[in-house]
Image: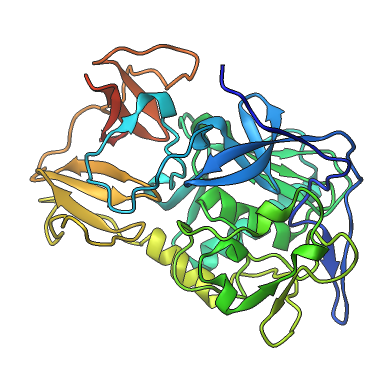
Length: 382
């Protein structure tokens, strides 16, 4: 049995983004109720240790980010920045493969019956912020296997939490009773696969962090992540950045710009958010004829960005946050008459699989190889 390092906290404020409200002239923040006896466990994410709360049912919470347990590990696994397009995923790590983007630029969602009319209005307004400025689209679920369920957490706060990336049928956004459009827009960013801006490797060139002012148990919210999945350069105006007082334990700033300026709560997408999202979720689709026409062959050792497409061994691949997804076979001039995922069951972490077994996960078909690595066989619907 693996041993988990348990850190007992006297106090923990579990919210991250929704700790504050803003007005035209002042910045305030509201503290969540103190939670005594919360236990944090140390897990590895993208090769670095973070402290997360195990909230049950295979979900671990890091501030306002909700991880599927398969996105984290008890042992350090080196992040491969230059994977081959057909490189498999270790069966023991599950299929989450850290962070996954959504297929076809579309977040599929379910509105839970617990949502109030106000929460629904806020949700649609936040979706429109992304729709009107980026290539991201939203679709209410019919029978899709990957979707995010938006629920009312029942907490009387301007707060929320969200799954990181596409987590199949386990995706969740939990809204507080008073969650505003800015907070919800931020949470959709997590669902798209974005981390917090202050975790970026280049952040120390632009801001100063003050650990002495950060709440106990929240220091990992400000760690530097050398394998950040956010695109572009550090953006102090990003919807994904904390304010200067998020997770402050004494009313003093936890983060300031280099010139001493306070960072307010952001409520709309910045120019950097828009450009970066359109890079990761590019517009346009491959039309008829050869699906690989005009797409360059993959080059070993070249740095690729999320959303980039290449050809490899006769197939079209698209770069995900930490791997490649096979989109289609090249020279496809006649549509495949049936969905390659028809009749294939969704992946279950509670089932043992044998080589040759096929599963669906996050909108893709996977097959377990003889070396016990899952191989991406293509996008469902093809």
